[in-house]
Length: 247
Image 1 (cartoon, rainbow, N blue to C red):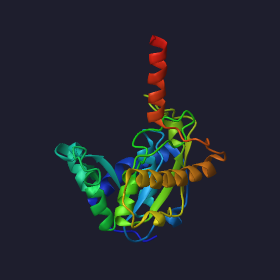
Image 2: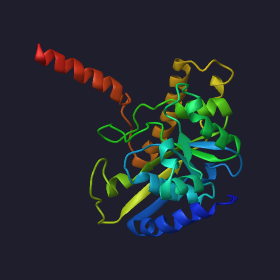
Image 3: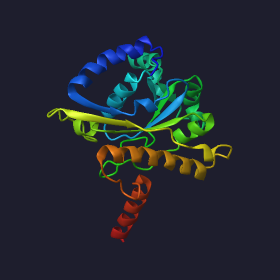
């Protein structure tokens, strides 16, 4: 794996984060050979702990292709945080945009410059009771179809044992293992040269989520549920039950 030039800010952030990560978690990292050595690409990663962006970032940094995470554009505007976000080349998401694709214009530009852009397609911590990947948002699919770049599905497991979803305190002992498995690129070619309708983007997103889930099944040694957890459907069902109870 060739190592591209890494900015001062990224090396500074790595110098701060890598020592405690090395102390706190053991590593079982596989699939680095699937990370492209050159050119722009997307990694699509599952999300089950507030600690996993740091743990996954450590893995991705060690491949030599540093990740550019998406974050709210407001974080880039001022102060030390803004300087760090800009210096490490993170990607501002313009949530105020009414055009869904232009909201990811910076991500598209980064891919076209040859960068690695990391997406959490679920956009939040999974709500699945057993922490399987739930339904995804269409951002990664939009950027992938716009740029036709490789999409690498990455599954991770173990940071959730260090810091459970929504937990306030980490569980430091015994030392946890962070498992990462990066798979081969997702084949999205059948979606090329077609209008990016909501249905097409939803289908492409499900292909990406299925690839992530398949990698996580290999890590966990078990099968995911046949039906993916959909928080929108769960909220609708909860509201329906509430109305029935009130009647």
